[in-house]
Length: 362
Image (cartoon, rainbow, N blue to C red; front, side, top):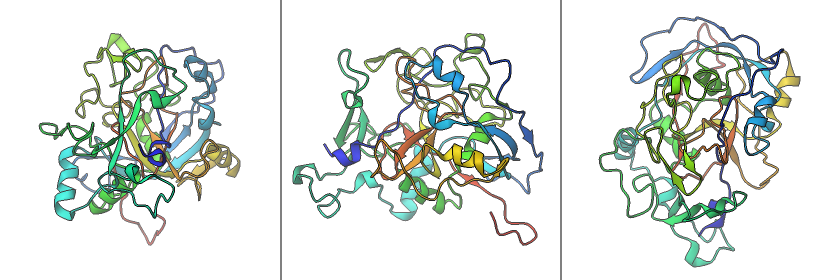
């Protein structure tokens, strides 16, 4: 086991029921810019016109979760404006990532064995290529110890997401996983795109709604219908698959949000370009009435693991459980060390239109 790669895990928390909104909501209406697309949308992308919205999560939602503190780093709710951009309709798939690898010969971090120079105190037998894999235990475990259900597996990578015995044959339309932030950024650059900022991601995920708990509204199962691939059953031992899937699902198996984007909650976490700090929103709130096109802090800091360089992740995954966690709520945040992947982390890309009238800020 490689403890350095195993330590910086960011996980999702899930929500059982909805509490009523307080009489005075901290959320203001979303004001969409309605800017027309500057041209035809690139293949597989949709135009997000941008605008102003209330970003973050209501502290009242924290009481709905079995684990306290889910919304702590997503406060205070603050007003943000983003310019228009194109966004991938789905997370990047195995088929798309395979084209990138075939064209470039790229090797993901999980496929490269760590060196003694990188980890001078690690035993030689721990210096092997691999990645982190969800490994459900046989019986009940202490939910305060995530090592009970995660293992660092030799030979786990994007082509072998659960370890060397697994493969992606017949899974072209599944999200590519076991990709670190570094790998995702390399793909985005090759594709002529980039990873979204956290603000862009949340604006897009809300789909024009304001202050709703989920990307689709305020009910977890409107009309009794599942809207995302999350974890049902007894976490972490048995996913009952009530939503139609046990583990990872192909992309676009649930209805899109108001902007035509699929899987903005559940299935896989999604990398953003922002460094993670728990006080980011407090800094943005004091910077002015409206924060425009924020790109996150200049440097990362996680007080739980100060030495780790973490990026913000969004959206939750198929491991979100009402018995453990709930960060598929649209305003909440995840985090992950930028060189670490797992079999529940993926990504999608965005593309900004070219600058207009000499504007060099994009």
